[in-house]
Length: 265
Ligand SMILES: Cc1cc2nc3c(=O)[nH]c(=O)nc-3n(C[C@H](O)[C@H](O)[C@H](O)COP(=O)(O)OP(=O)(O)OC[C@H]3O[C@@H](n4cnc5c(N)ncnc54)[C@H](O)[C@@H]3O)c2cc1C
Ligand code: FES
Image (cartoon, rainbow, N blue to C red):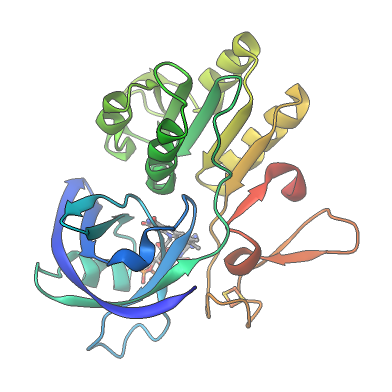
C-alpha cells in the first residue's frame, strides 16, 4: 500500500562528485518493498518545487531492534536535488511510497547480468542484494557499470562485497576500460548463456541493451526514468509509447518503472 509519511534524515553525504547518499528512518512499512520500486519526496516546509520528486529505493538496511532504514542514491541536477543535498541529519522529508512495479527477483538457473549507466545503479544495488538472498551467490551475477567518466562509477565496492564480478567502462577511459558499457556486456553475453539482463540507465543505453537482448534471445528487464508529475497514475505526465497491440501508451509510475525490454523496443 502506498503511504505518505514524514521521515527523519539519519545521514546525507556526498559519495562522489555530484552524487549523494541519504539514509532515512522509513519504518517497517517498507519491509515488503521490491527492487525497482520508488518513492516520491518533497521538503515539508518548502513551497518549491511544487511537485514531488521520484527516487528509486537504493537499499533497505536494517538498523537493528526492528528499525528499518532506506537509502537513496541521488545525483544533484537541479533545484530539488540541490536543496536535498543541503539537508542535515535530524531534519525531515515528506515521502510517499513504495510506488510502481519492480524487477522480478528469483534464483535463475543461468547466470544473470546487471547493467548500470551512471545513477541508474541506484535500484540495481537493492536488486543485487535481493538476488543474492534468493540464492544467486558467488560468481552467478555479473555487474557492468558504465559512465561518462570515473566519478560516474558508483557502488563498485558494494557489488564486490556481495561476491559479484564487476566490469567497469567509461567513455573517457578514466576508470575501467575506455568503452560503452554495452560493449563488455555484449562480449560477456556471447560466452555465458545468461538467464536474464537487468538494466537501468539513460534511454539510449536501455534501448541498446534491449536490442542486444532481443538479438540474442535473452530475457531483459529495464527500469526507465521519465519526468513525472503526480507519480500515481492519474495525469499521463509519465506516458511512454509501447509496441504492445492495443496498448499504445503505458504509465511509467503505475505500470513501471520496470518493463520487459521487448515492450519498449
Ligand atoms: C522512477 C524514477 C526513479 C528515479 N530514481 C532516481 C534515483 O534513484 N536517483 C536520482 O538521482 N534520480 C532519480 N530519478 C530522477 C530524479 O527524479 C530527478 O533527477 C529529480 O526529479 C530532479 O529534480 P531537480 O528539481 O533536482 O531537477 P530539475 O530542475 O527538475 O531537473 C534538472 C534537469 O534534470 C532533468 N530531469 C529531471 N528529472 C528527470 C528524469 N526523471 N529523467 C530525465 N531527466 C530528468 C530535467 O529535464 C532538467 O534538465 C528518478 C526518476 C524516476 C522517474
Ligand atoms: S506521473 Fe502522473 S500518471 Fe505517471
